[in-house]
Image (cartoon, rainbow, N blue to C red; front, side, top):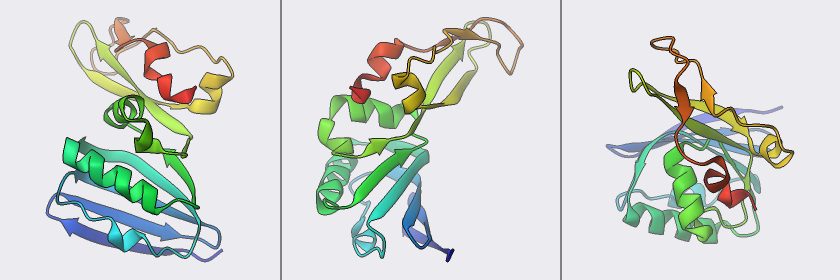
Length: 164
C-alpha cells in the first residue's frame, strides 16, 4: 500500500493534510472554511474515492458553505465519504442538503454539555449504528467534574436528520 502525506496551507487560517493510498485519498481539513478557502488544488486527485475528515474544522461561514457546495459539484463522479463530522458540520448538512451532496456520512460527533460545570464534550458515533437503532445515551458522566449530569445537547432525531 502506497501512502504519501502532503500538508497544504491554503491561507493563514485553513490547511489540509492529504494522505493517498492505492485506492483512497484521505483529506484532513483543519481550521476555518470561508471566502478565502480555495479547494482547487484538490480537484486533480489520483483516486476517485475520497474521505474528508472534518474533526479539526473550527468554523464555516456562509461564503465558506457556498465554496464547499461548489467544490462538491466539481467532485461529481467521485465516491465521497465524510468522517468525524463535528456539530458545526452536521448543522450544515441538515440545513443545506447540497453541502453533503451524495456523500456517505460515516461518523459524526455528538455534542454533550454538563449541566453542572458547562463542560462540552463531543462523542464519536457511527451513522450506520444510528441507522441500525443503536441507542444514543441522553446522559453520561462528565469527564471534567464527574457529574452524572452531562446530557446530549439537542434532539438526536433532529441531529441525524441528514441520515434519512
